[in-house]
Amino acid sequence: MPLLWDYDINELKRSKSDRAKILLLERQINYGVDKGEKIKLAAVKKYWDKLNLFPRHRRLFEYLIWEK
Image 1 (cartoon, one colour):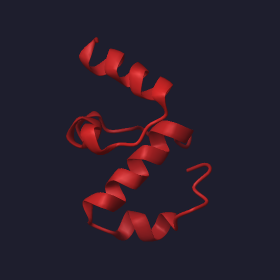
Image 2 (cartoon, rainbow, N blue to C red):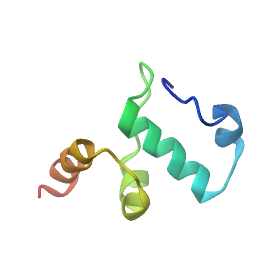
Image 3 (cartoon, rainbow, N blue to C red):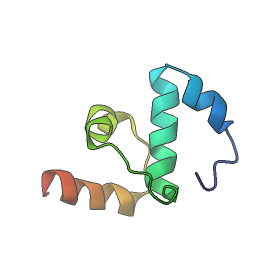
Image 4 (cartoon, rainbow, N blue to C red):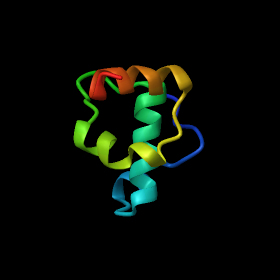
């Protein structure tokens, strides 16, 4: 996962807390994912109100998911 400089990715992946899942999801959406990795739609919908996304990424996901 690129540009994950402020958190230990292995520690976050082992953690079961919602906050860790939100941080990983934010990084995946804002900075991209590794080749072959996918972002789970169910996770995006579940944590949508808690995600801190770049404005353009938020608008794109709103369009793709809810066609707003």
